[in-house]
Length: 112
Image 1 (tube, rainbow, N blue to C red):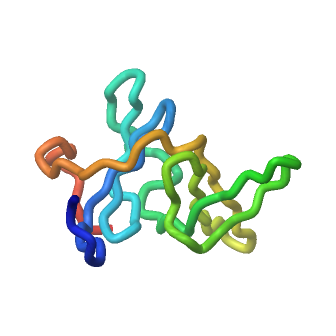
Image 2: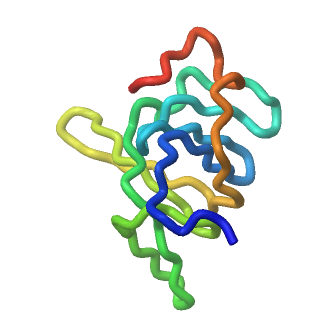
Image 3: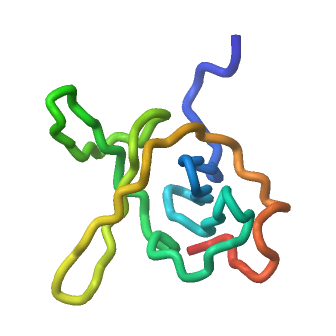
């Protein structure tokens, strides 16, 4: 049996089918393609807060939640674009892993 207390990790990696989203305190600090292995410096999720997960209902409806996204859920970010806020919804999360600080690009700051 593992640790049963409050989650204290600040860094996590959300793995979707094609993308890794590296987060520090729920802010996306790095994005990497799982297909090519290349870091994506211009991805719209960078420096954006993970707002929550998205629950997909059996009838096809999607409901955003304020709960932390879990495996099987898409996650979403709110992208401020001037007068209008748009949303980025990822594909379903396949795994949530511990982030390895050494694997982040050296030039990328760890704080958003």
